[in-house]
Amino acid sequence: MARTTNTQAKTNRLARQARRKALVAQRKAAHAAHRAERHTIASHLRTMGIDETTATGMAATLRKKVTGSGLKGFAKRDGVYRRCTRYTRNQVMNALTEYKPRKTEFKAARAHLLELAA
Image (cartoon, rainbow, N blue to C red; front, top):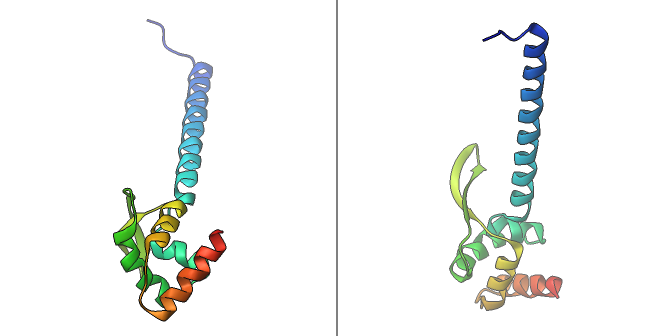
């Protein structure tokens, strides 16, 4: 069995590196696309214009109303990774339609969010 020459070894190495880079780029693109649409309930509410304290308060109740299972993951808060569940915007909006808040600020926030969705 003949040994590979230096030129062949270099060609093979460059081909492996190119394949590996292409696979890594494909995985990163798929991960970014998947991650871009899935966020925690509170982060969805914050991006739609609700303040921090109202968003965290509403998220606690909306977790009970969300239909379908979310994607389990981790979120970094105050330098510590914690478990979280990520949902799509449609799942959060469906939960908002079923949500009947009692607090006046939550009622106003719900009305504002449903108005944005319409």
